[in-house]
Length: 173
Ligand code: CO
Image (cartoon, rainbow, N blue to C red):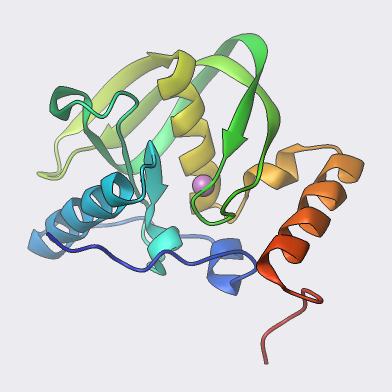
């Protein structure tokens, strides 16, 4: 078991676009395993590779915490976004202790590859759909706070900075 370090906002890596994987080998399989370990260790329900500083299009999730519901999605692509828009409380392992109501479609059809490279299609709804939307956003450098109104976003950032003892958030030179 390997628990990786989770990059925290405002780390620049969280704002970069991840690369599509041309081939899936033992390195990706091992990364996915370590990401799952990291997610469980942190009591998360999902994790994307850029959150551990690796710009590869890999996400892992488990909405229930039961082994059978574990999912690895490599090169995930949202094929269809549908269902009614639902608001629910959302947080992020990269923005610890912060949460807000985020509005997202309640269902999703996603196409991805598993750790062996096999392509599969999945129809998700409820929490699983929300996790998939949240994690695929990470692959494009988008965070849940970007889905809030500008006022709510500023409020969350202000609270976060206070909590983390950050006096300002700027670029790292
Ligand atoms: Co997140």
